[in-house]
Amino acid sequence: MKSRLVGIKRIIENEIGERIDTRNRRRDLIYARAVFCKTGRDMGLSLSAIGKVINRDHATVLHTLNNVYHHAEKEVYYKRLYEVLKVVVDEGAQKEEVKDRFDATKELSDMIEELQKDNDALRYKLVLIERNKDKFTELFEGLTEDDIDEVYNKLNIFVKVIKTRVYR
Image (cartoon, rainbow, N blue to C red):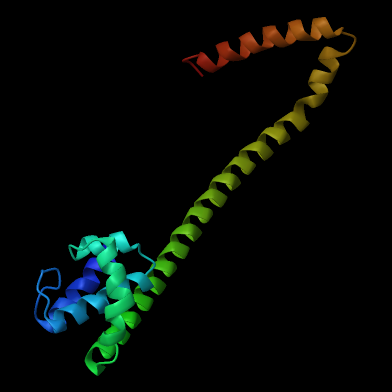
């Protein structure tokens, strides 16, 4: 957002042919700074952030907005400058909004793809369990709960050994 504000400052400086962050108090520079401050405020930036770009404090920016901008907008040149900047800011916001939506959509798409892979893996495991459940049902038939726990622990060790085998 701040980089967009610096871009707005450059547009104004190119238009008037001078820097607006100087200490000069000429009316044309004061009005250009007022247009800049109003544009920055329209962008939703803080008074402090706006002031940093033009080497002013927040109180100066507030004074400019409350007392100077109203005089600047009465002059056709500065009113048009503000209107052009407002269009530039609105277009920038729309582009940023579209980019944000694109990024969010891409992120959701990636999440959906990952969830589909997880779902496929779980379906495969479920198919294996369904195919082999009768074997295990027969194996555990007639055993007590303690016996089933013992068989489970021994199977767990056996499975770990199979998974670590080098030869397949």
